[in-house]
Image 1 (spheres, one colour):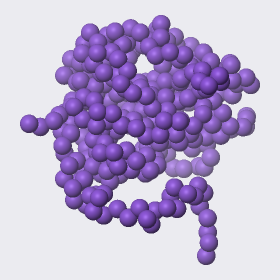
Image 2 (spheres, helix red, strand yellow):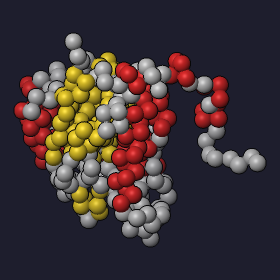
Image 3 (tube, helix red, strand yellow):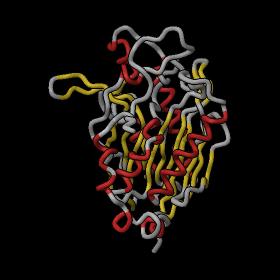
Image 4 (cartoon, helix red, strand yellow):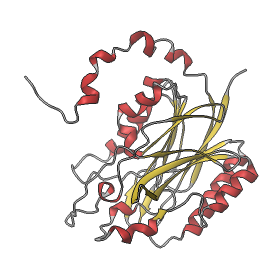
Length: 311
């Protein structure tokens, strides 16, 4: 019997500084209802799905950013999302800013959770590839301060047996790094859930505008094909407090083909019935890791950070 999972990519339009958690959660629930009505068993929301993309703003004191973070999940303002998921029998993936006390210290992470159809958290991931900068740069159009506001994730890239398959998570900039998919692929991943908040402008280099969407597709499609896995990429999009975020949410098959794509920059649900066995022929042929990988020649990947010219 085929193993299938109908999944929804629940793209979000802009969330502004003035928008309340209650209003945002109501939007998430509306998208969940739409997905459930279409027969979806899993709903994937974007990175930082509860707030505006606050790393674009400089705050002198980190405590000033605490209003953007969740101290528990579910909390008072998000509990209704978990309750509605349980009532509908639908699971979900949610990206958010996490504030936690561990080992006597306060830690801040860019995190995501996977929640089952019973409303119980299955697993958590904390973003590893943090982009941007940590120093104040007041003379650029907007800032990208993830390196200031978040710590590097400390969970690695785990997978979970859930929804009839093997699922993994990544967040935004993680999707650009082939190591993300390969570590998940080495654990037999069958579907990777990725939320993102990506500016349409590169503040570090004047790229042509079309490259933003091209690079997004390229990263998702190559990661899917090279590891024989489904990839669900979900955006927060549109003009958020005057700064444009890229849309282009899509569901990518293990063949590298985009099988569903969002058409707007607003709240939108796209869905696909995913055959979790589709990637098996890729895993058993061209990307048969056990047969073809040569990790003895990949040592540099794990031991060296920056590029180094030695000739």
